Length: 96
Image 1: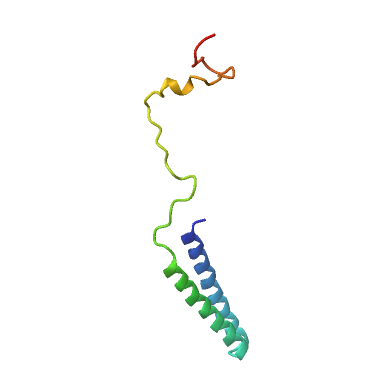
Image 2: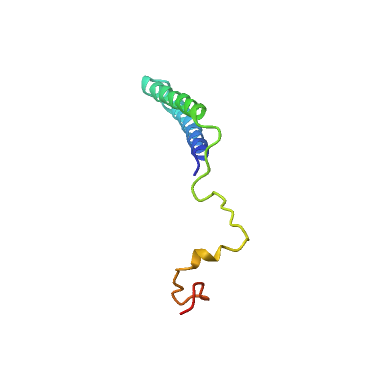
């Protein structure tokens, strides 16, 4: 997952937490404990908003996503002058 995907997932979880706290508040009333939970939920929401603002707008590409262009031109045969074929393909070096 990317950073932005994780931030969206955290936001969805916080939204669900807010709805759940609201249901709990209707069931148990507005005592100090539920007010503390409501306050903590709001603090988490504010902290996540700050984190979203601090996140870089354009993240670098993840490793493995870089495009490597391989030219169609033939390689210089001098690169293979002293190479051993190990039984694969044609000989590239000088014959015996």
